[in-house]
Each structure stands twice: as structure tokens, then as C-alpha cells.
Image 1 (cartoon, rainbow, N blue to C red):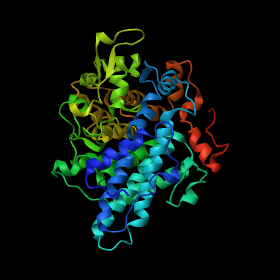
Image 2 (cartoon, rainbow, N blue to C red):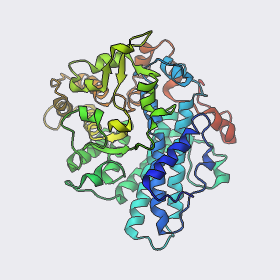
Image 3 (tube, one colour):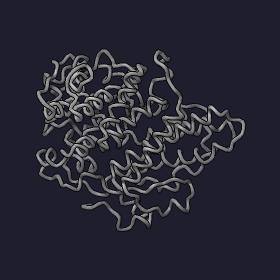
Image 4 (cartoon, rainbow, N blue to C red):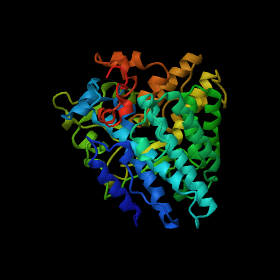
Length: 459
């Protein structure tokens, strides 16, 4: 039974479970079939279980966005990271398997709560409304990542094991339509947070109305609905619940900053630094991957300003093909920077800048350039200028590299802007057009008869 007494116990249990599923993630229908939600005392453990499931997908979500693209070089011995670093990805790679498993773990727990909570007596209407809205948000978030990473994926809407053992792919467009429905429902029912609320309320641990609005801004950006992307990014910024940190270095070195809208946390008892997918282990302990020369050059440029703190150089690492550079954003629990941020306020400025540029709103206080210069000012970098729309859009792409490096956006950005093939063929001779999607994990195809002969093209 998932009826834990302490939050830390839940996190530790989920992490220990995830260590055993690195190479062979559990099938969708067996993810969390021992959850209990029968009475009011069960609500909070089930709720936390859903966030713990989200937490399980955070590291490989980041890897999809940045390891698939041009931000890393392979520097170790693990085959999974050799494939990602050398751009020779196969359907047996453990990273897609881990992400898939945790995506569907999140969806399963969300569906479980959505099914079981409504009829329970003794739970206030306000609590039901908030928790059910959180489940809609979490399910929408998982499906959003799944559809943009794998393309067409199974649409899991129930906890029925018989149904979940044999689910075919649903077209990506239909998955994204369900994501929009979930996000809109979440925005309607999630708690409203006012400016000036305490840090404990808005530190990014649980979803609130602004969290849903932030994901709607990202959703509409990906859909090229520029007007709505601008509207929702503006709602998040103008709410003034979250604020940019004065020093960018704090984004690198601290957890739960003032601009963190959604963040998954780890403690001393469950720091993920020693697992195959532990970011500290990969970047620092084993140095399985190192920042690519291209991203290092970008981050060290004058235009990046203090964003150069994202990487650090150590001459003692200079051996073989090692360039001596290390990514700094994910440390250990002792360092107070081992969390993974999924959404932060700076992204909203970048979304609004891009949405405005695409609508040819370039100058003035409500223009794209003004939004970029807010981030430039924080980074102590020179103001940017653009003579036309094309220059503004190019500046925004560069700014997303400076600001969001190693937060899981790069591959998705290149895909949605149509720049993937040009950038990646220049980066690696092994790049194939089919790498615009990750492969469906082999184990899932073997377990789910409806996925037979449904592997993504090229794998």
C-alpha cells in the first residue's frame, strides 16, 4: 500500500523503485496497482504519489531535450550515453525506456486519483477540486512530454489492467488535443495564488493556476498559436507571484528559487547522484557526458553574460578527448542544487518574446526585444537589438541557449522551429532525420501487442 507517513519516505521509496527499472521499466498496467484511495486519510499520500511519479521522469525528460541535441559529447563507457552523444540512437536505449515508464507511471497515478477520489465522502469539496485539477495537470504534462518526444503514443485514460495491456498508438494531434483539455480544466480549478504569497506556497512543489497557465503558454508556443502564447506568458509574468532572481548564478547553485514555477526536489536520503540516470553522476562523478564545445563557446560569449556560470572548467579533467568542462546546474543534496526545474519564469519571457517576434511586435515596451533585454539585464549582458523579424527570431534562439541550457529544451526547440536537420547534420555526421522522435522502447513493443509493427520510422 502506498500509505506513507512521511513525505521523505515516499520520495525515498519511489527513488529506490526507479533504480530497479532502469533497464527494464515495468509495463504500463502494473505501474502502481497497489495504490489505496478509500478514505480521506488516503488523499494526501495518493496526491504525493502522483508528484513522485512526475519526479521520476524529470531527469530523462531533460536528457531528451538536451542529450539528443547538440549540447553533449560522450566521455565515458555507458552505451546509452555513447548512443546519445554520437547520435546513433537505438530502440534498446535505456533513456527512452526510463522516460516512457515514468510518463505512464505519472498518467496511471493521475487516472487512479481521478477515478477514485470523486465518490469518497468526508473530503471537502475544495480539496477534491484542487487535487483533481492537479491530476489533470500532471496527466496533461506527461502526455505533452510523451507526444513531443515519441510522437504518436498510447492514450491511457483508465487504470483497468485488461485495457492497458493492449493499447494502440493514438495520433500525436489527438494526444495534444487531450493535453489542451487537461490544461484548461486545470487552469479553471487550480488554486489562485496572489502576489505576495509565502514562499512555502509558491516554491514550485505543487501545481497552482499559474503553473497551468505557464504550460499553456508553452503549449501554444509549440502549436505556433502566437497570440495565445503571448497572452498566457503575460498572465504568468503579470501575476507577479514569481520573480526573476537578481543573480543568474542562483539559478545554477540553489534549489527552489523565486522564479521556479514547477520543480521536483530531492533530499539527502534519496539524492539521485549515484544512479545510471543521476545527473550529478553523469556530469561530475563519472563524467559520462560533458558539455559540447559548441554550447561551451555559446555560454562563454559576451552575449551570455553571467549565464557562463552554467559551465565550469577544471584543467585536471583534460585527458583524452575530455575538454575539461563540466555542467554545473545539478549538484548533490549537500550543494543545495540537486533539484530539477521543469518550468521557471525566465522561460515565460522567452516564450513571450518569440510569440511577439512571430507577430512582428519587435520594439517598444510590449515588443520582443524588451523581453530579451530583461533577461540580458539580469545576466549583465549587453542589450540586444534587431533590425527585422528574422534577426529577432535568431536572437531569441541564441537567448534560449544562454538562459535554458541543460534544462531540457534544445531538441524540442529545434524541432518546433524547423531547425533540427540543419543544426544537427552540421553537429554530427551520424545524425538521421528520423531522430526527430525518440524510439518506442523495445520492451514496450514486446509487452503491448497493439504496438507490434508500430515502431517509429528509422529504428
